[in-house]
Image 1 (cartoon, rainbow, N blue to C red):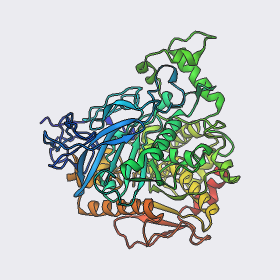
Image 2: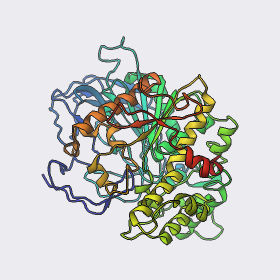
Image 3: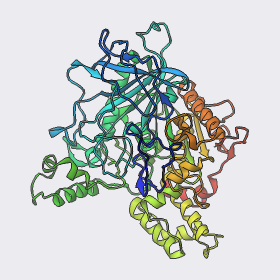
Image 4: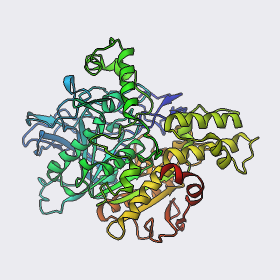
Length: 588
């Protein structure tokens, strides 16, 4: 086994810089089957079963780290609109599960379909689909060095499924399970389903599904034409959701009990489906973990003119001549050349079929999918790691001038920011001679702008419109694992609980895989609680008896203090001051 040393590399999932060494076998297995998140907490059971066509030999099984399969395997058929799929049994948290990897849900978006809406699979495959192997990941910049082999391809529109039951295993009378449909983060510029293991969540009695979707220019290039309508990454998600509704009963899932959920850009995506008329009726509940498509109410974050100019710029830099059909030209360039022009952050385009209205207008005019339950939340210091990624590297000395420069840089990203007003509000009472104090102030401001207030105000607007018909809950994460914080550079005194610190607890990472030894018993119990609350919400629309709804008291919003100490009281209107004195006029 080869030990791994990672220094100054990037986490593919979050684009956040990691500076750590995983040379200890206890913290990193480091063999070729490993990876950063690498299906944590899932192991293959000794009695390996290949789920596929009856009588098949069950060959081609793959090994993940710490997993073994026996050569002989029993096979079971699962027929889908894509064809017959063959998966395998695994075990997570002492629960036997069925795992299916890389099931195609769309025709390959290549050639004329680059930048176009995805097309449903026209004809089910005759050959058995081997769903025991990891599939292709979307094309994206190589921003990471991981131990998990990732093959990039435009032919990437596949999904993974973990389920505790199948109708074919003598459980036909078992009630269908709620479905949790995961959308990954990565700024709509990077990401892959192969970073996430749905086994631990599925062990709580739900069916877990995660689709790949196109990112960066492949998923969001806008050409103002039918064959390049923009936002096709969202159309990928939409088609995957429709595939699930058509097929998930074959995997023991209930098509009428779907919860869509995601973190960061995945949470942006969830909010986009709540806003989109095309997604109406396709899901019952939603979980938004840090992120919402809500920006300056007076100015689109990415206008159509800006989006077209960006596409033309890329085409010109790649050799397109003046006056030529630039969209068609970009269909002919090598994928590896196009992906090198990707930006760290990708924005959708509004005023389009998928997103006809801004969040501000849609929520104000009640033109959104209001027939859902919602759970949403943030981490307590969203801005720390995000600032280092999108604004400026961490500096040993951070001055007031640096603060102002960073605020102006954020205006380039989001527009409509008055730097002097930010200084007056966020530096009030701050010791401006102290680097840690100035950093904390900027992290608070940038997190408020980027994640906290968009997510909170989106949820609050939904709660206001929901009345007694639907539930809306909100949380603030106030706990982190120190090793994971170090990976994401959120382990300094001023960093607080940074962006993405919820991921390891939602996905049961303390219970297995390379990083399990980095978590203590407090982390493990907290992860059990978080997974229970997330899956309870998917099942019942209520995460916990002790968790009050956001507007249970209309005058004092209640926010769950998400922490291992389950006896902590809710936070009472924790965001009122900055909202009343600063952000209300910006967002609403």
